[in-house]
Every structure is written in C-alpha cells, then in structure tokens.
Image 1 (cartoon, rainbow, N blue to C red):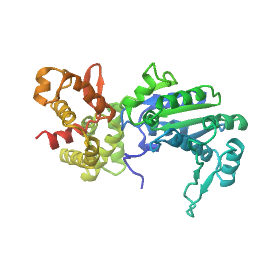
Image 2 (cartoon, rainbow, N blue to C red):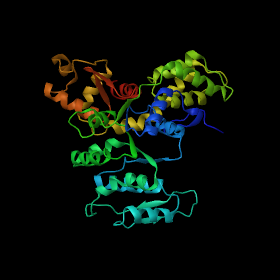
Image 3 (cartoon, rainbow, N blue to C red):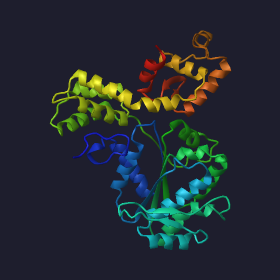
Image 4 (cartoon, rainbow, N blue to C red):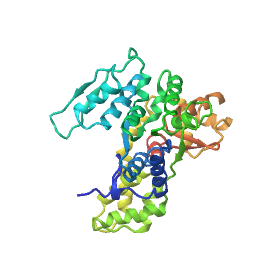
Length: 375
C-alpha cells in the first residue's frame, strides 16, 4: 500500500506536492547545462525537488550522477566519492566499471565488492589519497567521459557544504571551481542541509564559488497548495480532514515540507474517520517526541552563555541582544560575546538572522526547548 505521507527521505510521485515553477526551472537548467545552487532551510524538500526535475528531463543523451558527501571529512575522501559515484553511475556492470577506470583513471587500481544479494549495489574503492598522482584529474572525469561518449552529464551533489569543513577548504574550493567552470559537457547541481554554510560558500564575493551558477532559493510551499494535498491524501484512506484543520497542520510547523508530511501522518494515525481537533493536538505532541532526541543532539555541548541566548530568543526577544538589560537578564556576558554566540548557533543551524532579526531555524525546536529548559 502506498504511503499517504512521506518524510525523512526523498519524496516521489503523488507524495510530491507543488514546486511546479521550481521543478520547471531546474529541469531546464539540467537540459541546458546550467549550473544550479539550491539554498533553503532544512526540511524544505531540496532532494525531492532534484529527483523530480531529474525525472522530467528529456533526451537519452543526458546522464545523471548523484552523490551525498556528508561523510567526506577531507578533500581526498571527496575525490574518492566523486570518482566512484561517476564511474558507478555511468556503468551498470563490473567489467564496465573496470574498463572506465582503466581508460580514464589508468593510474588507479579499483577494488570492487559485490554482495551476493542481486539487489545490492556494487561497492567501489579507488584508494585516492595524498600520495595519489594528480588527484585533480578526478574532477575532470565526467567531462572527459562525456566528450568520449558524446553525452551530457548532470552531477548532483548533496550536502555540498561539507567542502567548507575541510582543513584546507579555500584551496580545495579554488581547485574545484577552476576545473569545473571550464567543462562544457557537464553541469552541476549543488545543495545541502546547512543553509548558513551554503550561503557562506556561494553568496560571499570573496569565495571561489561566488556566482558559480543559477541560485535557486526555495521558499516554503504555500498553505493554499498544502491544504488540498493533505485533504486528498486523507481521502485515499477514506478519511476526512477539514480545510481548517489541514491549514492548522501547515501553520504549526511553518509550512516546512518534511514536518507537514510527518505531522499529517501523525494526525492520520490518531484519527478515526473524521479528524478532530484532539487528533491534531495528539499528532503535534507525537511530532515533538519524535524529534526530541535530534534536538538534544543539537544543543549538546553548548555553553551556558549559548543556552541563555536560546532562552532569550525562546522568550520572544528577536532583536537588541546587546542591550544591557537583556544581557544582564539572561546572563550572556559582554557585547563582544554576543557575536561569538550567534556565530556558533548559526553554524549549528539553530538560528538564522534576517535584516537584523533573529529567529529559530526549526519551527518545532523552540516549542520543545521551552518545555525542557524554560520552566
């Protein structure tokens, strides 16, 4: 039976709602070979949008390479993930992988693991490290293959902000940008879950990736699109939810796509036949419990000053954190300390700043935090 609501993973088919304009724009970028940078808060459906646009691309000469570099801790792990993802995406059999490696990365010796389970993917290791000669050759791999085969390649990289975490990050970014910007048969779609770091990499004029491609910032899907979607998904289970309660589901989680789907599913579990206000309340309580362990991880290791800053924000203070009364009331140290606190909390994706106003990055987090730490 098809899931009526999907969260925590990429959304496909009927579970994907709206994003018509964004999908069209991204699809056209893929088809025209235009680099794209996707920037938005967590839980707003970046990955789902990429896969939706990918499904709509026409033309058998366009090939896709997708990868997630969240676990890459240095440039060589990145090169390893990049090369192996390209080879495995463009070859379906072991001998094809070996042939591609021999032809385009002749100095590397691939190690291939195959599970006895026929549904499992091939595992490839190239052993790329500091001693690997000319590792930059890896960055040009998709362009060389595309030229040889007469195809176009779209490389989609999730969690790209990890590049900003490397010890020699600026040097790596210059190297990568310098090679990728010269490629004519390959385009890139770069996105990640940490909005603040992505903005640092792509919006800062002094950074190598500034103006790398089309900047696509995802706003939340509007309520008027969510409400009929939620109603229709309840109807697939012969259940009824009023437009007012469907709208409440959206508003309580500030239209965050993943939360909307998770909350709606919780409500569906609670309800029988016709959804009541009590079902919405119970579904929301379940949502808070489901995310509590993640929230605890987010604040683990924060200093007393940083926790006090969050308490101030949770109490309704959004500006004027350096005011003497505020600093004394919430014991946040000196004025110079405020900037340091905000930097850490932004890097942890706990807060964001917009035109001098500070808000929580996650709409459910402050509800949980106030219950746990503002009693």
